Amino acid sequence: MAHQQRLMERVKAILIEKAQKSIELAKQSILQEDIEYEPIREALCYFMEEVWFDASHPTLLSLACEAVGGDPDSTTAIGAAIVLLAGGADVHDDIIDQSMAKDSKPTVLGKFGTDIAILVGDALLFKGLLMLYEACEPLSKEKKTAILKLAKTAFFEIGNAEAQEASLRRKLDLNPDEYLDIIKKKVSVAETAARMGALLGNGTPESVEIMGDFGRTIGLLMTIRDEFIDVFEMDELRNRYEHECLPLPVLYAFQDDARKKELIQLIERKELSQEETQRITDLVINAETSHALVRYMHLLIKKENLRLRQIPKCSDSFSLLLKSTLEDLPY
Image (cartoon, rainbow, N blue to C red):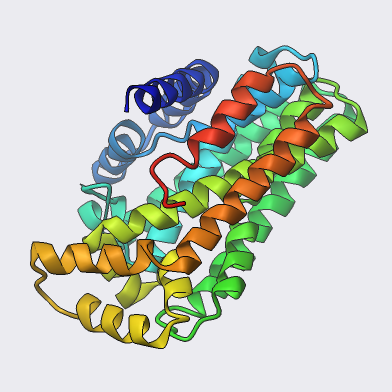
């Protein structure tokens, strides 16, 4: 337990060190806007100060830049833009999924309603796009074009993935491999952030590819981990059952017909005892398919660590981030 605690403390330290400047710049930039209608201003403040803490994308930018020999501080402005863009996409995603709360806190949708949430998401996207364009202005034409194209491609990919996922909501016979493919598309911004960082650090084409692959892999691993966490959160699990696709480990557990039948009967109940809640967790976490999914994560990490040997700088940080995605998962 002490080792695990030290591991997470080290990960948290990396995230704070690498992302704090971008996060603060993002907050300052959006909250200093002259927004006349108080409910929108209040909702923006709530989202940026109490809900949204996107440390992963600016951290990937900074680490990738540093790893190829660049100055990590050169990524601050673009990191702030990505924080706002990802935040806008997240608010709109909550509307699509009808997510009223996350991590025991109301979402903007849950606290302020649909109309305000749409407008808050719009404001974050517009401001993020403007900041990204302004941050790219001092760059060479080639680098500016490459970064803007990366951003466009990533957010289009997310939009396509979200639309595909929405078309499959409440589909209890959904092939888990199909849903895993959607997840791989949804982490495109993580890949893009790492690629942008390597470009800003003047990395070689090969190093840009390696960093991009790392970004996609760590994004996928973090998302699969979140899918496991949602199995333990009964409110989130029930919301996903009613309005979204079920968590990936549940979909894999559904491949066993008896397990699927019992899980559906339990999830559909309005009230669950502590024993029934634990039974849901046990049915999913103890399934062989869940162990196979974690073994898949281990394989991804092994492959990524081997490839990262070509870029030895920041190797400890990369290895730590990869390892942290496995903490407390079944294996």
